[in-house]
Amino acid sequence: MAKAKITFEDIAQTVNVPAGTRVIEVSEKIGAGIIYGCREGDCGTCMMHVQEGWNNLTVPSVLEEKVLKENMAGRHDRLACQAQILGDCSVKPA
Amino acid sequence: MNAEVDVMRHRDAVEFADGVFWIGALDPHLRSFDIILRSANGTSYNAYLVRGSTGAAIIDTVKERFSEEFFARLESEVDYRDIKAIVLNHLEPDHTGALPELMQRAPQAKLYISQRATSMLKALLKPSAGDFAYTTVNTGARVSLGDRTLRFLHTPFLHWPDTQCTYLEEAGVLFSGDVFGCHFCDKRLFNDCVGDFRFSFDYYYAHIMRPFKSHVMDALQMIEPLQLRQIAPAHGPILRERPRRYVTRYRELSTSNLADRLGNEERSLVIFYMSAYGNTARMAEEIAQGAGGVAGVRVSLYDLEGGEIDSFVDLIEEADALLFGSPTINGDAVKPVWDLLSSLAVVDLKGKLGGAFGSYGWSGEAVRMIEDRMRGLKLQIPQAGLRIKLIPTQDELEACRSYGRDVAAALSGDTDANRIIDFADLN
Figure 1 (cartoon, rainbow over the protein chains, first blue to last red):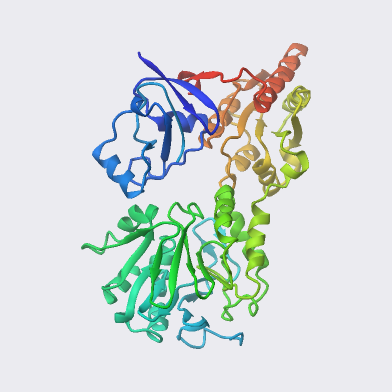
Figure 2 (cartoon, helix red, strand yellow):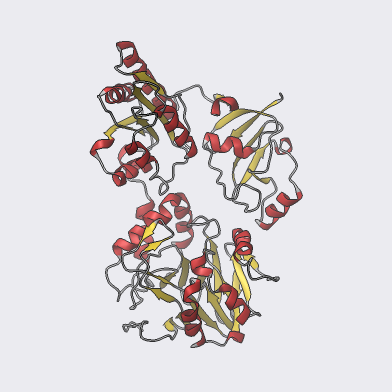
């Protein structure tokens, strides 16, 4: 299976994951600082900033786009409970 | 204006700054709040009215059961048609219980909430069908009431994602929501008149704000530069006499004591254990010895049998790494371990390292169970836990020292830089 590396900048930790893994699955296990609320893409609590590899995450769904907009997300902000890792990237809490 | 009031005797609004009124309700019989908090004399749900030359603003409401008192106080001072704005600093039901009714009575009023409050507002207003309009505001946004201006400060996670404070610029009044609040019920309403509420103030902080200390510090950066004549929180006394000391108290409560003692270089590793026959205790001592040999790590060793949960929670809050030692009895870790591990909701555990060890007789499940609980609490487990059957041998004691050294090395950062963890190893 294809692998990808995701780095959580706030704890300076990189994890090698199977492509398609959601950021939430990794960040919770490793104790990164992204905070979660509803865990289903509705509340916007888990907004994270993608420092590098913006294009290596799945494209946001219409629902995620809506929630990001409601929460005044910046250009490279995503919801960690929704975004899936396809290639190397680095993220930190927004 | 500093005359003593008694809001139990009337249902009028109470003016405490020019054109600024308390229109809340007292709940003297409340003894338990949100399951996690106790109150020895009840609480208050503070709502406020601000009159401006072009209209009035209502800031927060009350728990639904107290709506009648809230509306009576509101009506004593303002006509619903004159309400121009409704500001919600925090959407928990004890502050929004009267909102649906207020929106019906003052349909022209605009609703102002923080950006993160949107989904909560929708969930709260679900039962009252129909469309409703609202405006989201962020730090620096202003609402004009003619000669009065409300300015918003977004203060997330104090103590929900949605929380904000509202500052009345001309009067120097900060409507702070749950920040600087407490569950303390006193009909005299103001901090210079009510009974001694220092305990309630600190207790409220300890249970509500403490898990969010870094967010408290961020909020204080915004609040401290303000001209503060009065602080009007959503619970407890209105802080009109020397309000700044409560801001100072929040800074004290949010500042690490241990960092002062250890400095920024040294990290703290705390080892807790319980032992039935002294074997797990022996392991704990050897682990402590191994970890203590690593530069930059200060080790503390505690027998859970000899202390109280609250003081252990204080230790954990300031620690950088936690190890728990437990024997396995009937397939489980022992109760004092679970008691402590289920008392940590009041502290921020983010970024701490964890680990477990223990001696066992038959099967030794305790170590893995403790590790799972720690993962559930979002601790990182840098080393797989150490299990030893009954009495440790010399080799096994060396394994304990080695385990201690490895955990301490992970804590001091003295491991392979940028080591990449495999996802499969995280499970």
